[in-house]
Length: 270
Image: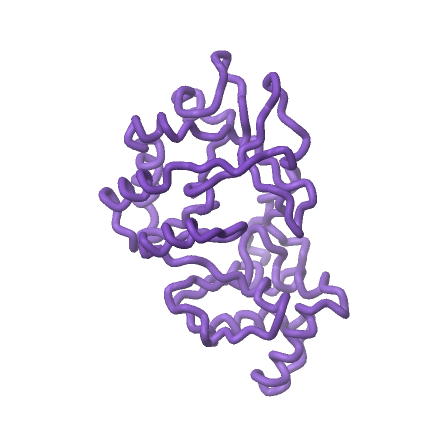
């Protein structure tokens, strides 16, 4: 479930007092994330940020109504951008003008104690997964653990610095080969430079722990799925694109871009 709502949504229109809007309904600030290794200008999402003080006064009903509706159809709900429930990147909009980048934002404290206390009273923790990706701090990890929410491990990231010991990963985490924000596993492998640490570390892993199998474009998705199942995590998630070993043309989303995303479909021809 996304943390933020679209500015053009019915929810924002009907609950303008819960968002950082002026009297004319224009955005005073928008959400995003600061610059990092993957996006030098950060990510500017354009969603209006919340007035957490007013959310609390309303009993967080806008969140809880959405959660209740989702759980009518789902057994497990991923709280997207989990860090935003604890602290969020707020980018001001001077005179109602949306900036071009997320660089000039600041971290703002939400109301995690109040929110998660109310969440725990209304819903069982077993229904949720925390998408605990991004800039984690001690406070984010503490609220995740206090709520007994499983976090996420993205296998494509695990080879960037060293050869991982996947068997030691915590059992209460969900491990993914990649998420909607990653390239497909085949696309990821094909795009890795020959001298990249991820490529060399994965080669070493395959040589020492997978009977010397040599990864290539045809088998890389199967290899990564096998590694995920060898981990200590009790639950494993495979994107359909990896099950089908599809390349970068089937990527779902490229963070920081507005066009051409979320267009991939599983059809009878796949």
